Image 1: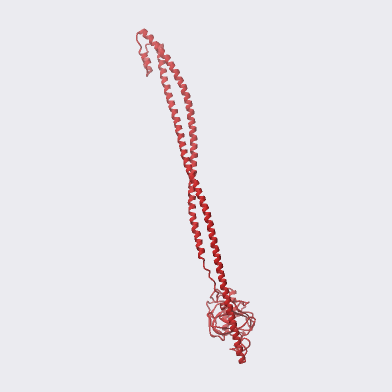
Image 2: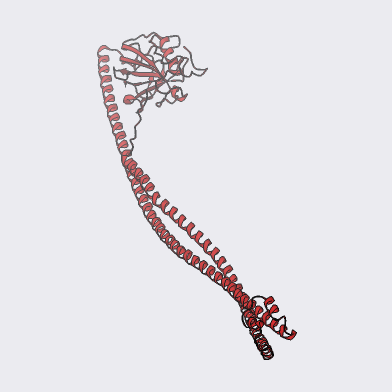
Amino acid sequence: MTRGKAKHRSLPRTKAVIVGFVVMATTLGIPQQAYANQLQSAKAQVSALTNTIDQLRVQIQSASIQYQDAEAKLLQTQSSISTLQGQISAKRQEINILRQKVSAEAVHLFIQGGSIPSWFVVAQGNPSSIEVVQEDVSTVSSIQQQAVIQYQLAQNQLKVQVGDLHKLENQQQSIVSAAQNYQAKVQADIAQAQSQLSSASSQVQVLVAQQEQQKVLAAQQAAQQAAAQQAAQQAAQQAAAQQAAAQQAAQQAAAQQAAQQAAQQAAAQQAAQQAAAQQAAASNDPLPGQGTGNSNPSPPVAPSGYANPLRAISGLISERIDQGVDYNGSGPIYALGDGVVLNTHNSGWPNGIYISYRLTNGPAAGDVVYVAESVNPTVTPGQSVTPNTVIGTLYNGSTGIETGWANPGGNGTTMAAIYGQFYGTNSTGFGYNFSQLLSSLGAPGGILQNNPPTGSVPSNWPQW
């Protein structure tokens, strides 16, 4: 027979609190991740703008160097221009002297010839070719011709110098303007990048502040969760304590009920013994268990010295073999052989009844027999018994009885349990051995649930 086990029910309140924790934790994680992503993006933008500004600063340094070089070259050009202007001024003075000289020669020729020569007219204008002058003065003296040629060459040199001057001025001014424009553009780019950097830095500060707020909120929510979890644990502990108290109360009530039943059974046994004593006194026969007189005064005793303990059961029905052998019916149960009673009660068995006695004769001398469940004991611990002693009365209960080999102490367990053969409803080696013993004494054997049975008895155990 098996003992019942209490089932523990889950605590819905605790489960709801745990689910709430999961939902809160999931909700909390979403904004934190969003702030982290935004902050990372803003920091990357700040880093890129900082690099851009560094590169622009390098460019403006290069522009400044170019501008300084252009200014230096401009100063050199201005110095060259000043020198060239001096040369131009000297050349003009030289031309004026040549002009005066040519004019004097022209006057001299006019006085002599009465007319102004064509070469003088050409010299006074702006001749485009030295050949014209040479042709026009082919008839004059060498001194006059040389003066006109020098004058014309000086005029041409002056024009070239003035043209070079203007070209150099324009070139240097273009270089300076380009350097100024480049420097201004780089400065504008730096200003724009710095403005963007300021905006990105402000965004980073805002995101950092928001992230700190999220951390504070997360800490507060974590504290609330911890408090809620602690409250849930306390509630679970209280519920468990209440359940344990209820179980303990139920066990105490069951123990009290078992004690009351035992007291009632003892009173009934005592009344039965008194009635038997009165009947024995009236018929002058000894009491069952205290002499040889009973319903079967001369039981058949086997060569082993044992007798059928179920010989007087009315409506005897054999049932399954498990740790021992199960039977049902009603009537007296005798001891198997000579022995000493060890126990009569154990709360672990149905109805709290567990009669055990150690055999003192036959092949199983020293081994312990048990009879349990739907039986009212008629013996007490320490009492000596024989095959003629009624140890209890089987009543036709819902569980019947189970009888078999008990553990050596006879305190509530079986040999099948000690050897680990029994796991609920199976037939064991020790139960099958006891069934063979009862069959050898004339009782019906039990019904095997599995063949072969689970396990076997030790090699030195009696066989029947």
